[in-house]
Image 1 (cartoon, rainbow, N blue to C red):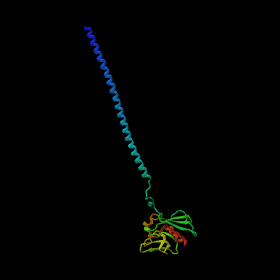
Image 2 (cartoon, rainbow, N blue to C red):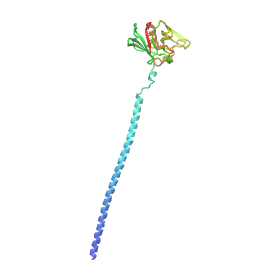
Image 3 (cartoon, one colour):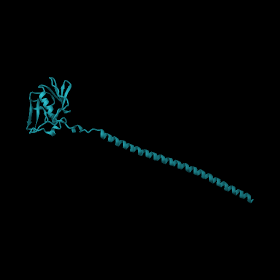
Length: 226
């Protein structure tokens, strides 16, 4: 009787141990699964954050690079006006043309250039200054008989050399860059040749161009200003 109870007691203990071990294995397996899933989620979030940060950094770098390239390649709008001008010599490094009857002068206010033309062909291009505040007349004119070596206008305080009239017989002229009352060239004015309209209405040329035009312009030669 005693042995039977002892056997039953041992079996009960063994059964309890087996049940406890099974429960432990099940709990341990579930816990490991949850830990694994949590680790994967954290890893995914970390990768996503890193990608977003890297993407933003790359974008910022690209923007900075693009800005730098744009700054290096965009020319300054004032570059043309900063270029030095030879207001004493010829405008082009080619011989002056030999003018013929029918040749004409095309003056562009927008370009601040005077083009010597034969038909539609440009023979020579001269830097010039036309009048500020639209002081130079627009239209078609001709080279008039009046011309001279030099003049000085007391009212404006300026004069010029090598002048040739094209309107109102001595009022509107082609001439050199301006001189002062002592016959000295006004350098600050001369250095603006070919850049913007700053004359009192006449058409200023470099010294060499003005002398050549004074010596070679044909009376009656057509002048178009636009």
